[in-house]
Length: 311
Image 1: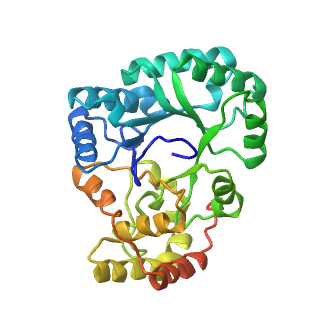
Image 2: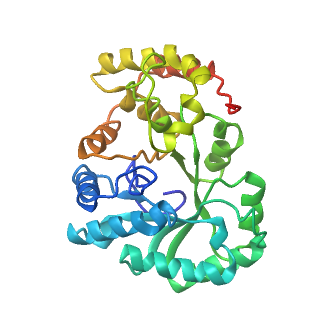
């Protein structure tokens, strides 16, 4: 992971699905997903304090304990929201997160988004975070959804530590992160963690403009499923399906493998609601697309311009 000697699996497991937002609120179902991840070699688990208002952290911590997973065998990454980043609340939030996860320390604490509505000075929360590293309650610090200028400011206030990772939206339909964020991660030996690597299911090949999803969850308002945008994806989706047949994989595995080949810093964290989906995500590792096929996908992807003006 980044410039550290901490070893993480090439694909992680995102756990936002363990929340009312995505509908997986049954613990046994969540436990089965986590158990399959452990079984297939995934050791990097990404959660957040806001996922289900702590439910995701609770499920993850409880499952790892019940499965008797040695603490050193997994890397737990959680995220603290911008609202919690005043220096007093940083400690309170981490204390609650540790309790929910049932651990004595968090391997990677990521700043989920800047405190843009509360205006907490960067220096104040940087100092609080660094104290938690010094005390041993946080192993490493990462950022999520931070602009480069603010990352630079944050890093300037650390006295003995630094960030090790950057997490942002990045997939074949939404590629703005490659303009400056991914190059920054690569230049600074930071792990880049794409969230929504499958564009919330749009790149799985399950849906078409003629057969659009009928979502009742967060995806109902996603721009990629807006008909004007989704119509633009047909050539790419068809190519992913053809390559899936060629490599005896699935469109999702082709998509994730494209990300892995894009950069050695890349560690996508697709979610999964079933053990089969975990197995599918893990199957993106251990092989790679040819350069020609990678380029084909790349060109088709670049031709798609998603608009977020949907109303």
